[in-house]
Every structure is written in structure tokens, then in C-alpha cells.
Figure 1 (cartoon, helix red, strand yellow):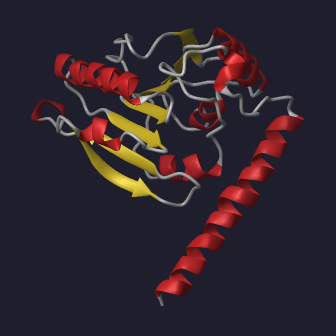
Figure 2 (cartoon, rainbow, N blue to C red):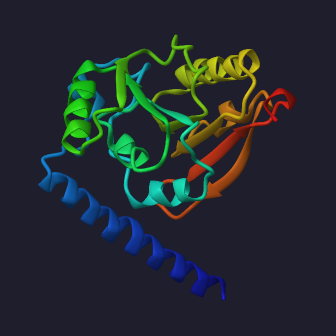
Length: 214
């Protein structure tokens, strides 16, 4: 039975992510949207501050977002947005505010072109370093695709926690390829709400759990 379940999961993954994801990326390319991965060395960034850029939008992220109570009062920030691939998917949901930042201005320039081509000119983009960025107060959702190393993640999570203490609210974090899950839950303010295993990398949804945010 376990083997049959495993086969079904593999088939679902193949249909959704491999076939569906490939078709999704082909549609974007036909629009002139750049979804190609970029190695860190090509960007000239310090590997202690950032990771490679890779596309993370599409069917696997859509599945997660459909399960969440997103409305026009919500604001989402893509932390380390790269070329804006995830924002292309996030912008299809009814967030009142959409924004993304990245350490690389080159990636932000590509993201701006991509989002404009897709008709999402309202998405805000800006350059920032997650190690020192602390302007999370206006956001209710954050998205990350393993954007940086552990030390930077720790600093970013501390800034997120301080934001929730400063402006009490429910803050939801969507983290794909959660290599540093332990940093998210280390202080107990964020708790794991749900884990999705349907894509090549797990996607974990966390929510602030402090009494002030309830």
C-alpha cells in the first residue's frame, strides 16, 4: 500500500510540477518573460549574502495560495524576489498590495520588465539587503524561496519577529525549500501551519503565534 501511495504521489508531482510547470514556463516565455535561472557567480554577489536565482512561481505555488484566506486587506512581500517569478503568481490572487525586494538591481530590472509584460505594473519593487531590512510592518504575508544563507536568514527572521511585536497582527510566511526551518521556529513566535510536499522542494506555511497577533 505504501508503495502504491508513493507512486500516486510521484504521478501527481510529475503532472502538476514537471508537465504543468513546464507548460506554464513556456507560456511565459512566449510573452517574452524571462524565467531562466541565474547562478550567483554571474551576478557578482557574495555567497555569504545571497543564493542563486531560480524561478518558483507556477502551479505548485498556486496550490498553496488557494488554501490561504487572501483578501484585499492583505499585503504580500517577496523577500529576495529575483526576476519576479513568484510575484507573477502572487499577483493573480487578491492581495491589496504586492511588493518584492532583491539585493541585485540587475534582477530587479528584469523583474520590472517581466511584471509589466504580464500586466502587473502595480507590483512594487525595490533594492534591499535582507540582513538589514526591517520595514515589514505593512505586510501580512511574506514569501521566500530559500533566498539566502543561514546568517542572513537569522537576521531577517529577527526583523520579522520584531515587526510582529511592534505592530501586532497575523503574519503568514510561505517558505519554499525551507533549509533553515529551525531559524523560523527558533524563538517560538512563528509556528508551522502546514507543509506541502507536492513540488520538487517542500513549501511550508508558518503563522505568527504570539498572543498579540491573535
